[in-house]
Image 1 (cartoon, rainbow, N blue to C red):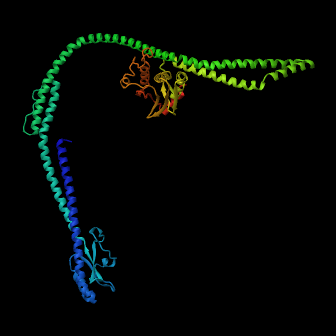
Image 2 (spheres, helix red, strand yellow):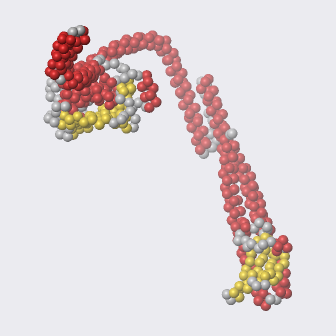
Image 3 (cartoon, rainbow, N blue to C red):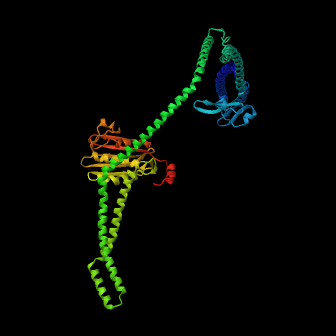
Length: 553
């Protein structure tokens, strides 16, 4: 659709909406006025008729009442009239038979009329007594005729107005779009001129001094700008053609240089990764060195009582062997005298040795030895898992198990001057490198133990919130100054005395947390203690089920 058509339709639509609103308002207002006039006329007529017939009703003058009724029907628009006594019933009536036979129901508004007659009444009152009433029906044909004429006139005026607006819109649209058509033709010429490079005969004459004239002037300026720009582009194109002749050689040389630099960067990156792995492993070994004495003590205790139990079991086994040999000798002997001698030896042995105690103690010794060796196995397994070289392999794991594994290694280092409190909640599983997370927890626990000078409490808590699993390690130690907290995770920064720390533990722990798409944060107050919190993204339920089936812990 053209702009002229849109202008005509737009103005006509606005005018149509306004006229329709005006028509609806006028018709509604005039209809209400007609309705009010009808109601007022009916009320006045009924009141006047009741006043006229009051004396005749009081005197029971039926002849006069008939005359009054006939006289009332002479008024235009009255369809029937009826006079009713409160004691004698209908005294006189005349008019439309159909209206007189139906049940009378007074109408309040013209909208209530369904039979074309507006029914109304007025009481015949004398003093404070009601002696009857008059009923009158007024035809609504005149009112409906008036409303119809009003609608016809307003509609005719609206149609004429819309025709005039359409003509005005057409003239205005023609005037506004004539110059725009000239601009459109000029724009097409410009598109051909840009291709051909010939900008002659592309200017548009200015025929007015209004806004369209200003647009035409701006259009001509744009043509001049395009002409200059085309000349400039043409010159640039010639220069580019000259540059393209040597560009391939320059690109090849630059590509070869970039490939050489890329190889150097790859080698440096490989060396950096190797150095990083060596630093992580060195930090692990340093942590193991701090735990070595405690771990050795933890292993030595169960091995000590296993050795003691084995000595007791060897004594019990010697008794059982000698007793079994005597029983075998008794079974193999055929002589009563030899059997009696063997029986005497068996009785002496049974009286000297507490066989019942040996039987009960043997089971207890075996169970204690089994528990001790299981303890050694767990410690060795934890050390092996912690000290092995890092791999990139991850698995779906419960972080509570990491806490238990790490505590089995570091508890002996801490338990003599720290009380360890664990609050391990039922948390979702996480996708982690178990060895690295155990290293983070080991670093946090060792640092917490070193921060407590004499006696204190280390609290370990796990919980989950908003698709993340959190592990916090809090201590009641010396705390960290506010100025040092900002640098706490920087490599080689340490708050420990010289020779007691490398400054890599927390830096490596922070890097491991970031590597797992998590975070490691700290809150601390001097003389109040510190609290480190490790956050890791939880495995979604669907993914957790699939990965658990595919991975073996």
